[in-house]
Length: 320
Image 1 (cartoon, rainbow, N blue to C red):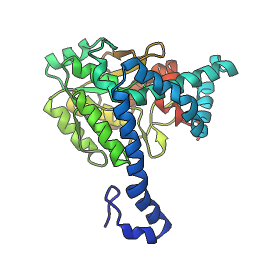
Image 2 (cartoon, one colour):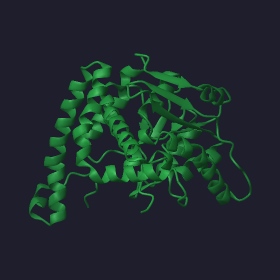
Image 3 (cartoon, one colour):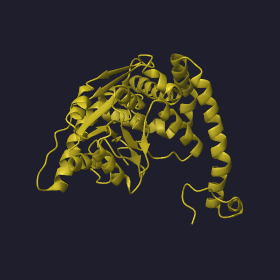
């Protein structure tokens, strides 16, 4: 049996439509896209930080037109979550900021490892990680995809907190190799385990106390942006639920974190928040729900406030 990530046989070119598409994607489309991505990565890496980031913003004038449905979702979401700023001109300006931030973030992958040394990342309240480490307590950091979200890891690692996280491989194996190479450059360590075994891997990492463990709360999975909830029901099979469950099981300090981009530039502010005080009772299932909602209540207003820098604004449809 051929697994999802296995190489499909060339003979599938003459098989069913689904198999033929998979074969063409694996052997033709993915290598072509990977070659283009690698070329861009190499060229961007040679450029100064500001120019690399600016070109990512500039190119979105063209690339955003390829994703009209994503743009429409983001516009609708902005009007729902920011009704006070729903005038057409304000919405247009917000969408411009959103796309520019995403374009900058994608291009900045080429120079992520240079940001800290160049003084581009300002960190606030890293002492929450320091204090948990000094107590010998496991640390669970729960960032969201704001600004350039990779800078949260860079800030922690560069401040002496070399941790780990579970990694979901990209569908295109060539893009995946680029992403892992980029992260290795700034010292990130990811462990296998995405899927059914992810909780087991996360539990092992937290118990080892080798450094902070990272779980991005606002993941996009099963065609749904799982968090923040924005009034939607909580799902037990979401990172929001998993995070509080893991923190309770290991007595970890659960520390929310986020990044915001400063003034449409390649400069960032990374903020670590006080550890979430977990509710503990004899009813563990109820505790998970209560604590997940309390974590969501922390992150939701942050994303609402910086909605024009939130990556998943392109994917979240509150009416779906």
